[in-house]
Image (cartoon, rainbow, N blue to C red; front, side, top):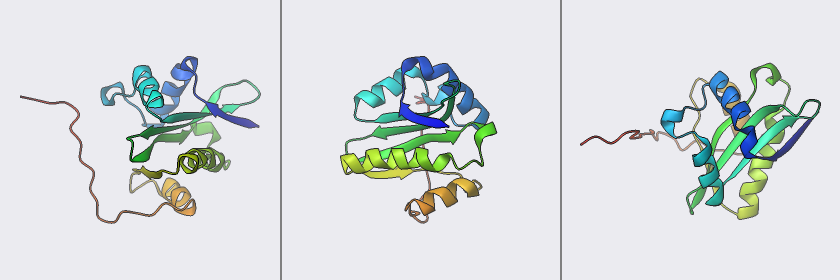
Length: 141
């Protein structure tokens, strides 16, 4: 059994372990406790899926809010729990938050991640077509 609840700061180390395993997070990208807390204070949310037996974190869903739309980040399930249909209830909780705010929600997914693409499409996400994603991680002079 599992429970979906909001993030608490003492969850952070377990979350880092899941992100490292799944290739989702990296301190270089600003994926740290302070950023999580700041994005929550700006109208975002962070859901964790917790195993009821031992209260270990087995899934994450980080939602940020830019005031115009929501962005779904770092959505993942711990490796040993994948394939058990646990991603769907975590996504449902995340989408319920977006619906409550009445905001669009956007995400990025690797083309090779067919399992995630299938999950997102079944939930109603549509591809934006030929958009390419660009980023500046560090500014240079």
